[in-house]
Image (cartoon, rainbow, N blue to C red):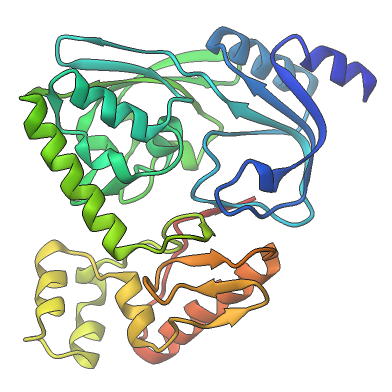
Length: 319
C-alpha cells in the first residue's frame, strides 16, 4: 500500500480511505481505498497508464452526480477528474473533462454563443455529461459535440461524435474502458441577452419541477420509449389526455409521471424518499444508505411493471 500511495502522489492529491459520500451529490457511499484528485490532463493520462500497467483496480468520476456509491465503498483507486481548462475560438468551446457543465453553459453565454443554454441546470462534470449523453429541455450532449479526446488502454483517441455511439442517455463510454479527457463543442453566434434569457427560462422550469433542499443524484430512471410501449400506454391511459398526447409526440414517456400515477411519490425506505415533487427523484433525508436507495429503486420498478407492464431502466450508475 505504501508503494502505491507514494506513486499516486506523483499525479495529484491523494487520500486513503476517503468517504465517497463527500464526493457524490447523493451524499451516500463508503470509503475508497485510494482517492486521487488530478488537475492536469497529462498527469491524468500518466496515472491511467500506470494503473493499467500495474493492473490496479480503478475508476474515474467527475462531479459525482448521476451515480450511487455502495455503502461498502470502492476497493481500488478512485480518480477524481478535476481538470478545468477551457477556451473559446470563434463558435467553438474546448473544455477539459473535469469542467462543470453549468460553468461551460455560462461560459458559452458570456461569449455570445447559443445552443448549450440547457446545461445551466445540469449537475456534474462535462465529461460525465458526455458519458451519459446528458440532456434537458429537449436537447442533449450529442447535439453540440464536435469531437472528443479520450483515453483507452494507454492510447489517446481523437473521436468524432459518430464514433461515440450516442443513444438516449447512453454512449460508447458506458460500455467500454474509454475515459473522456476533453471535448470540443460547436455552437452558434447569438446575442448575450438572448442566451441569458433562454438559460434563465430553463433554470426557472427546473427549479419549479425538481426537488430542493435534499441531496439527490438527478433522475433515477430513463424515460421509456413511447413506440415500444405504445400499446401498454394506451391500454392504461386515455389517448386524449394531454400528457399522453405529448408522450406520443416526443417519443418518450415520463418515468416520473408513471411513478406518480402508480402512487409511489412520498414512499420512504430508511432515510431515502421518493420525492413528493418529482417521482423520478429519490432524495437523501440525511443519512440514507445505498441499500435504502436500491430498495426504493426495486420497489419502483416492480410496481410500475406490475401496474402498467412497462419496465423502467436505471439512468444512474451504481458503483
